[in-house]
Every structure is written in C-alpha cells, then in structure tokens.
Amino acid sequence: MAADHLPIVEKRTLTLRWRDEADTEAFARALAASPALRDAFVSLQGDLGAGKTTFVRHLLRALGIAGRIKSPTYAVVEPHEAPDGLAIFHFDFYRFSDPREWDDAGFRDIFAGPGLKLAEWPDNAIGRLPEADLTLRIEPMTDDTRTVTLSAGTPRGNALLTAAA
Image (tube, rainbow, N blue to C red):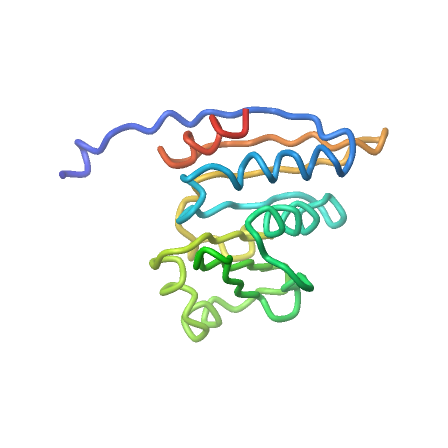
C-alpha cells in the first residue's frame, strides 16, 4: 500500500485515577485479559518512583509469571515466558545512552518478533523504538494517587484502550 494511502489511526486517549496499588493491580489484570496484548509494545512514561515497575510487576503476575520479577535497570532487558508460552520482554532504558547498544544487543530483532514488549524510559531510545501500541504516562499526585493517561498509537493500542476502559 502506498504511503499516501495508509489508513489513519485514531489516536484515542483515556485518563484514569489509581487511588492505590489495588487499582494498579486491577488495571493490570484487565489489560492482561485482552488478546491484543500478546504482541503489543507498551511504552511506560513517568518520573522516578511514578509506579512504572510496580505496574509491570502486577501485569506480569496477571500473565502468570511467578517468582522474583527484577527491574531491568542495569540489565536493560529482562526476558520472561508466561505459562502459555508468551514471550515477554521488560526493558528499562533509563541508563541507555549509546544507540550502538541497540544494534549490538539485538533489540531490533526483539521488537520485530512476536511477544509482549514493555519499555520504561522509552525516550532514551528515541529513534530506535517503533511506535508504541499503547503508552501509559503515570503521574504521582500530592495525595498519593496516580493519574494515568493511556494513549493508543495503533489499532492494537485502540483495542487495548477499549479493554482497559
């Protein structure tokens, strides 16, 4: 299909309020139940301590991952496999600074292949990452709640947004 004939994706957004960690867990369970999540790329944005890794831990638990779930801050990526065989890759690009790392580590192949990709600090890999299906921007509020803005970037992201609503 010619570039000037590509379908236009409606980039929908949804804003949620997570009052506590139970709300985070409930959202993660709802998202995990969506078939559209299987090969999605979910981008996680927010300051240090916003709750990105906490959300990922709840999502991985909802997908059946048992045992210790480490933050990939130093390793850049932590791979997991769900009981149903789903490959899951949890990236943390916080310390990512050299674009050559992207090529050397084989991240291009991971993002081109099947499986769920979750990326914290995606702006540090800008220009390397594909467009996220779904972006979660998590913002802590002064009352210890979280405002979460969900943005769909693709039709798959729109399906995930619908599942999360």
